[in-house]
Image (tube, rainbow, N blue to C red; front, side, top):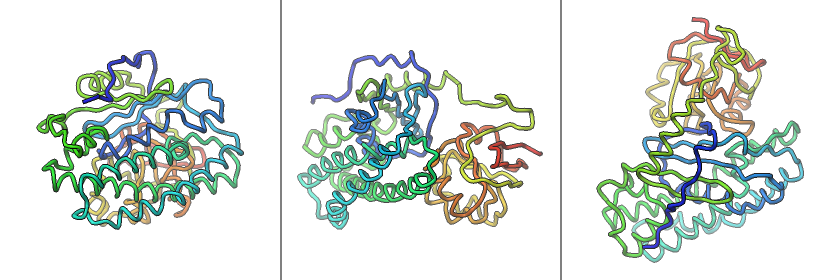
Length: 368
């Protein structure tokens, strides 16, 4: 088998990476070609960036995106931002039919040939769509234009809903593989697209079926290149990222009471008891929030599944996020205070802490 894995050593130790996003484990094919859109990205060329963004996507026990802040994009040009908005709309219009057609197909009606075709099609669609969508996902927009601040979150939700439909299409292929190859979703979810294609093409000996779900995997984006590392090499990258230990911003110019500072997503002031959730709590919201009211939600980020429970929240605090993130959108809709981008709120704050959330200044204080 011709491998896509590279032996070329990426000099990641020469750069400082910060954790941008953390979430539950996703099937690798759900995001592989999204990140491949960093290579030869058409908008990077329009912006005339001095150096390409450096990112590391790591998955083992959870999903993480790390970025090197020095190379991150801060897009202010309104003309290019508007072209990215139009680009996303055009792609949804272009690909909606093929996605809806495939999602209408029953798993039992698939065969290997059809699955191979659709997997390649889905990969192409995601790489094309994310040429613009990554500007929303990695929060590359840096605008103070009131119209764009209103429009961008709305466009992100539309793109997110379409991406979910593509995820459903990918999942249908994983279901076909599970039903016909005895390869569980837990295992196929940790496979790259190339490995799944080889499996569908009859090269079933390429994987260690007993251990594939246990191996770490890392995508490295650097210098307009996309490389995949698995096993020990991915573990080396993970160990280095964790050894940097740069996540804390406690007392970074703040008093002992002003433990956290973040970016304002929706202004306001609130005081209440903290409920902390992490990436392993997704899907457990009914139990966590049962009979709970007037709480301050603290999370790495929020996701659409949590929306029904936010009507009882007094404020939202997240580790991550920018002006188009889900927490920012929902907090504006519910008109509750929201502070995003604190980096480590889930580590500093604990269940039951009494806090003041001043979303007019972006500062969180622990009262008790």
